[in-house]
Picture 1 (cartoon, rainbow, N blue to C red):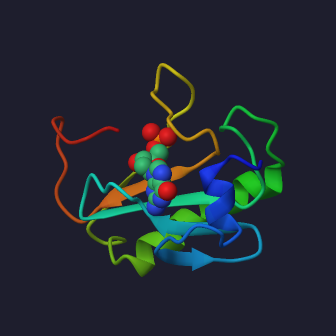
Picture 2: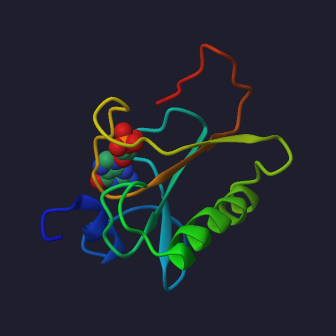
Length: 114
Ligand code: DGP
């Protein structure tokens, strides 16, 4: 998608702080972090959201990458929150499937749910 900011990050056309990358996914720190750890994981292939027709292998790989990112960001033991905003009511602002991984401090009911 020519006008998709996350496609441009995946292609290396827009800079990002990359946390993890392989042939199917890339993880990078959120531009506007809501927590000390706030990393996004995206498939390199463009899919608008989790309701899109995402191949099982890619969807599985995307979510298996969460624990790798948690290890790299050193929140595996302390805990973390995983959020996937989908569509307008969830206020999804970037229409390229992405998984938020949030952590690095205790969360409660008042913590950002994004
Ligand atoms: P969502 O509301 O779930 O669509 O969250 C999109 C997130 O993407 C939001 O937390 C900010 C982040 N974001 C938007 N543009 C960029 C960008 O160019 N670079 C990075 N690193 N993050 C971005």
